[in-house]
Image 1 (tube, rainbow, N blue to C red):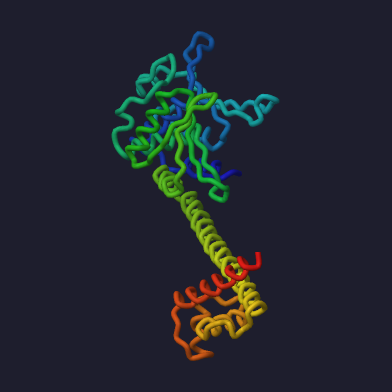
Image 2 (image 1 turned 60 degrees about the vertical axis):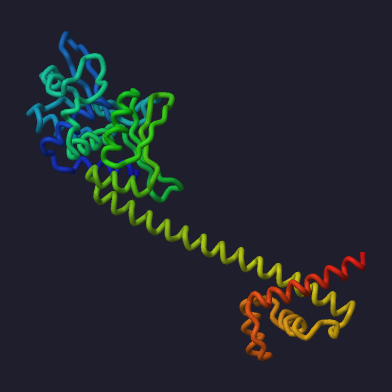
Length: 312
């Protein structure tokens, strides 16, 4: 079972209470519902591929309307890779539409009376996520949560409600409609909590924290490795320069303050300038700062460059 399916399963276990139940069901109707005429009767249908969501829809109709919908399960086929659950209201469809103030053509937007409090907004978004929502497992390479819809005005309403709850949702178009999405890990975690998926949120946070910590450690290690490589490369250049000066002009050509640093560099080829500063004091009793060591090494490099210039 995917992480998104786990989230939906947990959401279907939330208690059904007024007034958020109405808001949740109207979102499910808008995003999965349709109207048909069957045997000259008005029939309301909701379709989902998620069995837990189908049970939730059934429970919502039973609680709010005291109705027992007919549930039909279709078989998998070449075009339909998963079985589909059809929740059908044959009687009282008109009652449902009137309660939710929905028209017969298509369910464009929910009336503001069903989204005018934080609790109703959260209920509506829970229903929308159960209908067409998806969220990446936090172990994957990117964080992403989305809710899909065929209609732009529905996407705009979802975005508006999410922004009212302090989620900076964005909209993008796709071939079959629009998606409203979140990318920020912390916002996705907060969104799951507001919907009522507390266990999923805790799992998401555990994985995210471990992942972010591992990434931070890797960045530090990579930085330290890069710095170490720079030190090794610079030290080798310094050693080559010292040996060149010894070969061409002899050790005595070095002034005393340069000779002491040169001897330490040859003795400790992997030492940093900070370490050379400490070693100079410990072994030769000379106190020179890190910047002073750098200055002397640059002078040695300059002498070597002058020799190479003459040799050319």
